[in-house]
Length: 335
View: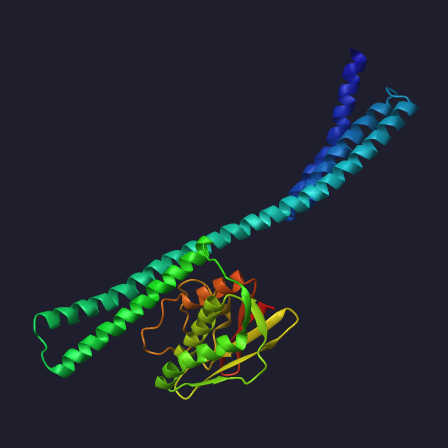
């Protein structure tokens, strides 16, 4: 019993002698990575066991043969433990970063949803109030002049079209976010899609005094769904025309790259502040501090979010940069 008590005290003293500096080291390393802390903790444990064994061996409670056996076992076990600790630390670190990014992304999405509800409520309430007022005026006979009646009818139709576009955008965005978007992929000519979109947007550009120019280049054939790609080009053109001042130019260019085809829409919006560039494709984002928006009521802040969703559904990518007198939206699509 006396020998056992002595061994317990010697082992405890040796372990504490190694563990106490280790505790101080852990406190110093608490701001370092998860991997460093896990490896340090395992190293302290191994050193404490080693110190306890050496302390007991020094008092001749262990033979040299037994000490060598224990040192070999501790060495192998410690090496394996440290290797596992490094692997586990990298894995936990990656999971922690992923979890932090997921939480940040969820907070951004929640903020975007609240902003979207606020914008949509405003964008629907304003035209509805105007339409109700004009409808009541027509119903009560407050206006009777043919010109005024025709103007009221025109305004009601215009507001109805704008609300219809907003509802269509909401439906398209909900399909993208819900994963319900089904693409009918086929080989399509990017030049035909751009040509049709430019022809449709030309009257709007002319009414705003904006020059709409499409590059006469050899447009590539890409793999995609024609209706969705037409929506992408139309949204980018409408966004560019809306934010380009009169006498400005919207230029559409395209070409081939190593992955497939690309096209770009460049406008003269005056540029986007650098802090706002990462948020341009967020839902309901309407940063306009450096842009020149038209007074046409704008959009619902959904057009560019839909562009990103449709492009990513095609396994492509879209990006925006400040270039020249405005912005350049570039879309890359697979061949």
